[in-house]
Length: 369
Ligand SMILES: NC(=O)c1ccc[n+]([C@@H]2O[C@H](COP(=O)([O-])OP(=O)(O)OC[C@H]3O[C@@H](n4cnc5c(N)ncnc54)[C@H](O)[C@@H]3O)[C@@H](O)[C@H]2O)c1
Image (cartoon, rainbow, N blue to C red):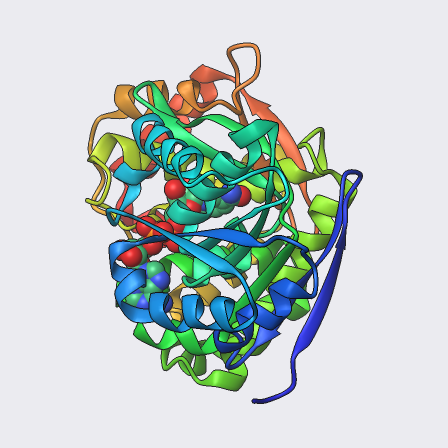
């Protein structure tokens, strides 16, 4: 096993560590025992991840003395639902878990958000540990304590802030990720680079080939840098009163594209990258941002091989979707803008201006890069 990196997280409500490195999953039991006195733990995972890593993790937990209750949900976003949370909670209750016991989330962002939400609500809150197995979950969703499920009216509409006790980001597990999931994670790493500064954007652009080939040293460095950025943000603003909104960079239009196209039609990473490209245009219009900002961002996204989506073509639908995003305030859509790498401004954008820019953006693809 190579060197491990321990990243401390200290928010208003909790202090814990994110550990990044190789071979971590096999050491889950001893590491969890180091932070918890629980006797039992519910290991929540999805069908795919269970087949890949379920046995290794439950063996490790058992060897460390835990009684393990396995809970496996179907794969995909549909498991991040109210019904699915109900099933998991019923399972926890039937297994007789008490307040001193623990929930362990093994999987991508779906499992992490679902299991975290169940941990936040079961018996008014029990501890949980995150074992993120997608790039997106490692660099984004497992850190910062946002948990929740989707409602019929929209994504992530029911949830809670609940910080984990520990996060173990095992780089080895990323080798089996499907290409589209890899790209979705890379888009989040690219977002973090834009918010971090020019050095990170340059590094990403120069190491794009190594990242595409999942070269372990490059992947480790990218994961660590993106996590450190997220940790800085959530430590300063645990409950999204300000700076944390910056993490929405690229997601206002990105989520709308995913929703209007129908989930799964446009890959999350492609949608977010497109949202970042459009946000760069808004930054030049509204903040007089230099052209170089959009250019370096395009160069990074292109080098990473993140393409452009076919637009759903329904501008009214995109506008409605941006309005229903829970981050819209008082009826105005808000954008996280990056006038220069490392700088961040939140801006409400009036509907007439937004619609005009969006229409021009969609109708003149050549000007989009
Ligand atoms: N809580 C937060 O702060 C936050 C932040 C960003 C995103 N999210 C949420 O995260 C979710 C998306 O997460 P995701 O992209 O990880 O999706 P996911 O959890 O659905 O995982 C994607 C797919 O990869 C499979 N998989 C997972 N690990 C694997 C591995 N190592 N090898 C092979 N296959 C593997 C899964 O079974 C699934 O089919 C969304 O619901 C989103 O809202 C939450």
